[in-house]
Amino acid sequence: MKVLVIGGAGYIGSHVVKELMQKGHTVTVFDNLSSGLRENLFPENEFIYGNILIQDDIDSAFARGFDAFVHLAAFKAAGESMLKPEKYSVNNITGTLNIMNSAVKHNCLKMVFSSSAAVFGEPQYLPIDEKHPKNPENYYGFTKLKIEEFMGWYEKIRGLKFAALRYFNAAGYDVDGFPCGLEQNPANLLPVIMETACGMREKMKVFGNDYDTRDGTCIRDYVHVTDLAVAHVLALEYITKNNESITVNLGSEKGVTVKEMLDTARKLTGKEIPADFVERRAGDPATLVATSAYAREKLGWVPKHSDVETLLKSTWDAYLKNGKLKK
Image (tube, rainbow, N blue to C red; front, top):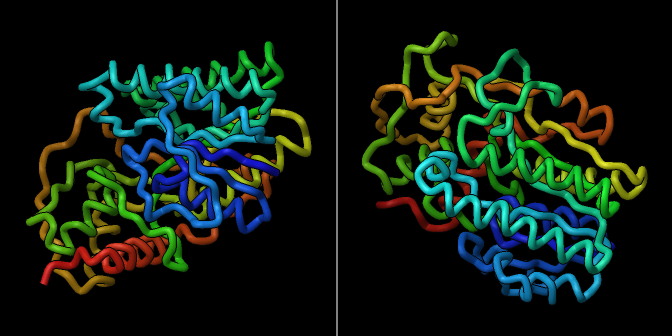
């Protein structure tokens, strides 16, 4: 299939591109490189420099003719979304509608969308399944939920078939070493740990150590980026074969505490990784863990790289490869 990957130079997008290529698909990357990196591009793929907020850009891309597209071009910092909702409205909502309007105009009616566990908000029960109530606690999660609703309407009216993939905590890097371009200004736990281990940060903060968990720190469900990439390809195959849309949760189903991740990182890197315990952050639940039973049943998806050691080692290797370790 000819697949357009929007945001394909980014962290998750570049891993999705690699997996699509390995399965024999012809991939074109569309990206404005605001957070994506040229070093994440594969030379055998066509690259279109463009902006999803410019209708002519995305329209001319779809005019080249594609069988399907993957959308990974949303902003994703939950905290920032509460400070700059306008930015997230314009990029995530307006940008996605631009993409979908061009797609249906050019009869590209298979869409894989990177949604998020942020659509759920505070867990009402654990593990979180697809039927869990949707009550986002940040504006980022709200934009993802609205996009899921837009896709549902476009399916009814325009025949768009979609896969909405609700990631839990994406982490790790390709175990073969490419792509390995580092995220810019990361806010997630593993990159923050690695930046501290490398000496890029003097110390890191652990938000809260008095939660009702086994060691007092938050428990999260981390899923390796390569496992996520595999899920995108399986989801595309599913909607192509069955001609029906699907929404699934993607997590490892294993909860890891912040302290466990930090202690394992200290052993793996041999670095002290100074960390201060500070007050809890508002809106941080004690535990977030998925069930991916539906993804297993429908897609045959089983994460193979989402153990703590692989998550940390692949991330550490990427930081070393990028020369971030300060002497």
